[in-house]
Figure 1 (cartoon, rainbow, N blue to C red):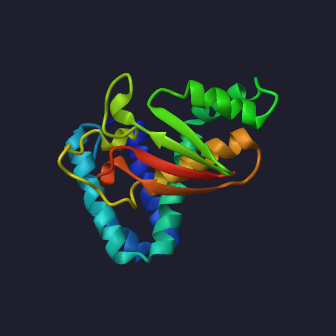
Figure 2: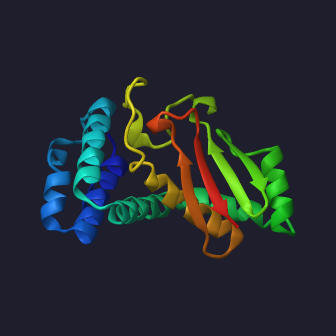
Length: 194
């Protein structure tokens, strides 16, 4: 496990502490101190699966949403280059509609887009990526194919998707997570309300 992954787990703890309190943080983050740069992907995924189970059990839905959304915002900051490339690509088109039409014809690898009215549906299909995977999140590389994880985990991606598309559109947006590969769906599905 690299420094980036360890930092993401630390960020989870920080977000839990700020939103749910120190006592809850201790319960949810229990065992995270054993994760090191030598931890295997399977160990990381197993710990995170347990952490999400504890989060679901101990924290009300609205606060869980906020915790994981903040983790997604952290991920967007860490992966700023991806967001910057999306914004730069958007600038090549005179209008948002022209940009969306181009993205629908040639989407980012491992994704696809559909627009219905004022809602953009963005699908993540990590199994079709150049290196097929279960999830684009490096922390989930080790989750066995036959296992699922709470969709609470994927609210982080919802936060990342929100920041990505807000950069492209240039204003605040609402994003809903509709389906998740890690929770058993064939692809992840986000609704971006334009």
